[in-house]
Image 1 (cartoon, helix red, strand yellow):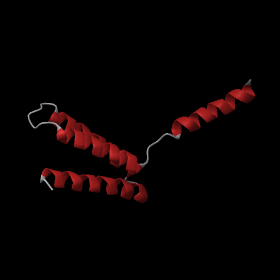
Image 2 (cartoon, rainbow, N blue to C red):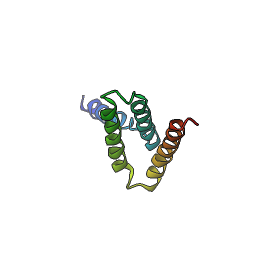
Image 3 (cartoon, rainbow, N blue to C red):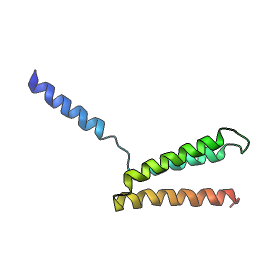
Length: 93
């Protein structure tokens, strides 16, 4: 029983920990959040809260990747493209 139980526990930890998102995926989630929040009408009372929640996610994610140059670069690449897209959209381009 112990011979089976210990490997199963180890396997479950590996599977559970293996589902972490890449910095690009995290940045894309933040981008999607921002797009969704900015798409709300200006008169919507939830718009400001939604934007603040996206900013909070951005700060939390940045704190996770800022120590690794490669991860930070990938994260920033996606967010930069997202910001450029949203700025162009806001000016009707």
